[in-house]
Amino acid sequence: QVELVESGGGLVQPGESLRLSCEMSGNVLCVSSMAWYRQVSGEERELVARLSWSGRTSYPDSVKGRFTASRAQTTLYLQMNNLLPEDAGVYYCNALCPPAYNSWGRGTRVTVAT
Image 1 (tube, rainbow, N blue to C red):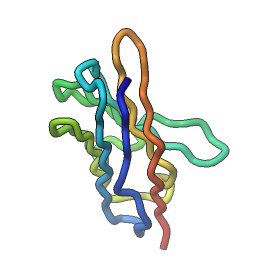
Image 2 (image 1 turned 90 degrees about the horizontal axis):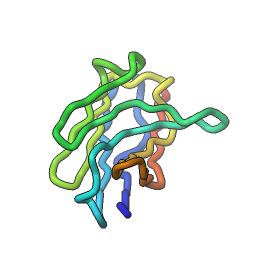
Image 3 (image 1 turned 180 degrees about the vertical axis):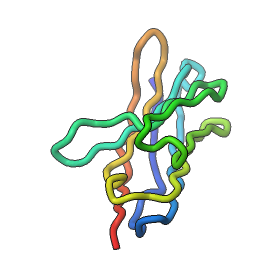
Image 4 (image 1 turned 90 degrees about the vertical axis):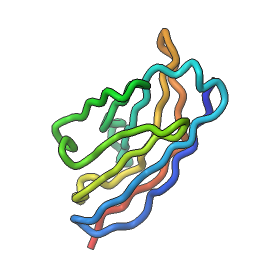
């Protein structure tokens, strides 16, 4: 099992930037892929970034060019630039241990407003 703890959320104005962090602990050696998701109350959880242990990334069109996922040792990051009001929500990190077991953090809230 892998334990995940997110941090770095907060209130920003449109156009500003935030960097989220996710600290991984426990059986980190089993992790082959990581991801960031976001969720607005009443809506489904949405994938915003996927990152392999070797550093390959993928992003949906809604955030491509603005968000960047990365890893340093056992910390996962999500750099978010030029934030838009529709980027607001609770952000969760995720870790996959093959064949298909997912661990989740408790989330960190991002608010984008004037």
